[in-house]
Image (cartoon, rainbow, N blue to C red; front, side, top):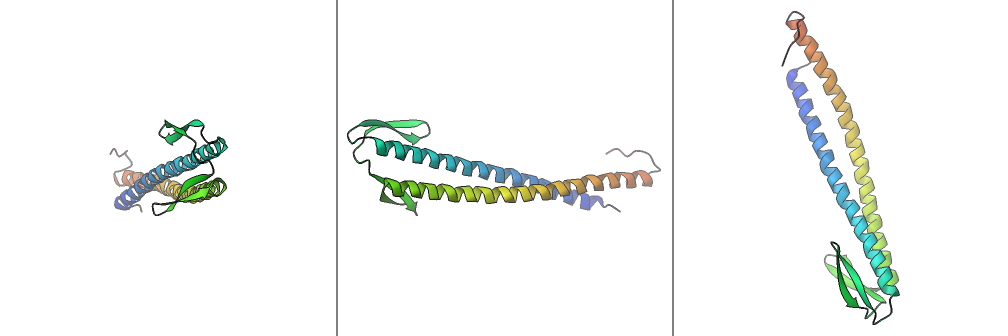
Length: 152
């Protein structure tokens, strides 16, 4: 016998699960944006390092914004190493750091996707249970009311 209160609890749990998936999808989009930011940074460092000292260049600083600047040192880059600390590194090291950070973000995104997939699978199973329980509840109510349809 299906209890209406249990059905409502399952439906509420399902809604919470679907909302959590939606929030996690938002986090996944943020991670994808970070990956793209690292790709752009790598491309900028590579281009800048190939310019001759004294050359005037446009440097992308984000948000579709560029600045005019002159290449003064194309062999070193300031790289964030965590805790709001930056250090000078040669171009090769800087590119390696960017790649490592990007790979870590990719791993985080993959783990998040696995969790989203698992949560979706559980939510799908729960949704099927809710549907089945709802149908059982309707049949029970029909039987209690002499076989007529019950409108809610």
